[in-house]
Amino acid sequence: MKINIEGYVSPGFEKVKAAFAANWDGYEVGASCAVVHRGRMVVDLWGGYRSGDLKKPWEKDTLVNVYSTTKGMAALTIAILVEEGKLEYETRVADYWPEFGANGKEHVTVAQVLSHQAGICGVSEKITIADLYDWAKMVRLLAAQKPFWEPGTKAGYHAVTWGYPAGELVRRVTGKTLGSVFREKVAKPLGADFYIGLPDSEMHRAADLVGPNHARVPQIQNPDARVPPLYAAALLNPSIRPFKDASSTAWRKAEIPAANGQANARAIARIYGALANCGEIDGIRIISREGIEHAVCEEASTNEDPVTGSPMRFARGFMLNTEGGYGPNPNAFGHGGAGGSIGFADPEANIAVGYAMNQMQVNPDDEPRAGLLVKAVYGCL
Image (cartoon, rainbow, N blue to C red; front, top):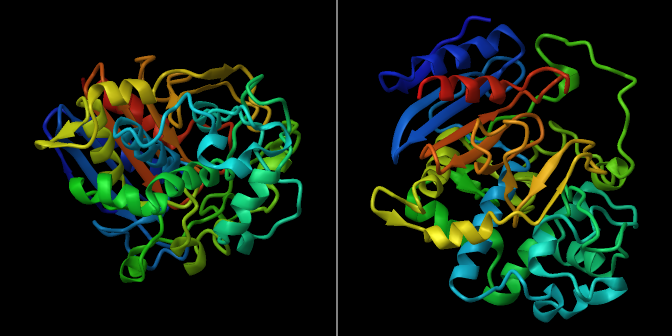
């Protein structure tokens, strides 16, 4: 599909624009891509459409749900509170939130819950999409939940539930929601267009997600793919439909710190650009280098995650580079989201990448569109 790519690339980064445009030879609908190098935005591109009917153009300030790319922003928020002395990674969650210690979770630390080791990747009670918007109910269920494994003995991706203990810890020590603290300490100071809980005033900018089954160019999927043992517990209770659920006003307004951030690539890259540059960009410091180093300390790793089936390396909320997803440097860190969005920082190269789109990945066996962009970025260095 021929589309107009808008924005700019600095000299030397033309390969990124070519790779971005090439994604529409496949099934891309609308997307944005941005790169920050040494504190300077060197790529800022967008193109395509905000909806699957190809009628509304993707604009410079278009926002889209970036699913678990949100977790990186929540992890940064907690890292800032740790640096301020309001939280400690090695302290037990129950010391801040006594109810959480039920059913064998009394010794789970903040670091363990952030690194997906707490064993609460789902809840046993059947819940609905509406329940995800009910903060009090979700934190009550997770506090009472019996772990799916002995906490601390292994890690398994807490796809949606991760955000509730993270957010409740923030609420317990600040009296504010995680989304509001993130806005106050990260997004607003940096002028970054990233929201965890989208206000009504910005709702008109949000793009609709397009699920894998509604791709513009249908792809062959593998019906025999093996389902990991805890996939259903983490991702099918409830099952979140991209358009009907995750594109709704109720979803966008709620705060689900694991999964419902609304952003564009420019905002993602700017925030990670600060982290790649020792916590500062354009003279604005949001965290110290030491604070970043504490946040990206590796806590656990697995060759086959029981929820995703993939190899993963877990830090304290951030994901550490695995299989080159964040480029060639093993110390790069960030977070990707279901369907393909991504954000990461590579302090060694002082580079950050953001990518946000509305067409979710159709075939998990295909090379991710973000991966093609990352290769192009490093091919420019």
